[in-house]
Image (cartoon, one colour):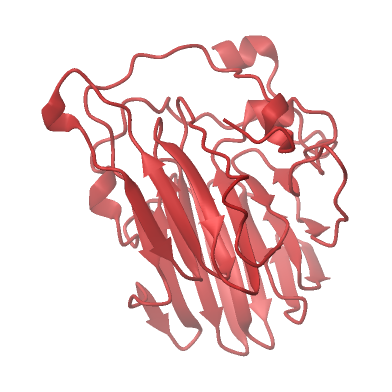
Length: 306
């Protein structure tokens, strides 16, 4: 249920009904500001948390750090939140320097991200990388796949071929457009507009997703994530409502079909980045919402139904 002023009020469901499991999964929480990193090296500290299809690697890199992937099986993303953080990216024979406050899409195969001044970087992968899956703090939560999430399928390859692509996040808002959405073959991110001060309690957006998870990455401020699960015939499987308070940096993985909404709490800037894998069809179907739609085609109806 969206406030009428919320652009998502115009969305329609593109997913066919699916059979729901008798017992729903819990939310996953990563409080990176209050938990030990899963990886601590001279390159920096990295926290890993996963959903069923995606992995978030949040890194505080030391000056001179190089983050490499020797044989990445598919495309991945790197979010450079801070304007002052410049990175040097290479993949195959291609190399480029990318200024901060940007999103980078890297191709399959060998790639590296050098950070001469160090800084904050968020890399987003699919769970097709077993070495990264093993590092996730919540790996045990996904020993069994979630029954109400379909098997992962990548979207069509870009017509221009796999290569390094970078996009500035300095994109002005437009009436009727929701956030700043980018997609590739494996992932979609929505870098939501920063919110100044606590969110108006009369304009929240409780809603649910039938068959996909949402990763909500807090980069500034603090949030209360409100979640409510449906009741099932078996009362033993009912879950209590949750009102989880997380500062930043942190990640909340919201399972379907939990009703959820998030409220920024700090007096200053509050900012979330929403993460989905594979990309969302409903967002992609809205003209002008996906800012790099020309680079990445949507599945054909026959492919998406297969």
